[in-house]
Image (cartoon, rainbow, N blue to C red; front, side):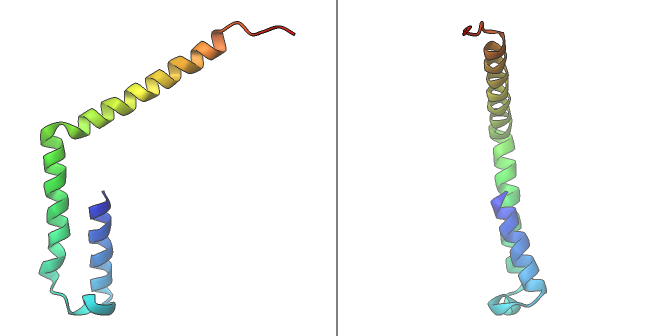
Length: 78
């Protein structure tokens, strides 16, 4: 995701002709987009995306279980 943000910022700076990016060819700005596509393809092909989503879901599930245990546990009386 960070590479996509870098690509968008570079494109914006080139479009506005800011600093040294004013002289850079538009073709060079396609490199970060290509790297982004390659990374997303790799992470989807290896299952990294699904694995991270599953870990996030499991962490939420465990958090929910712990909250319910605390709510249902007998409280100390004064």
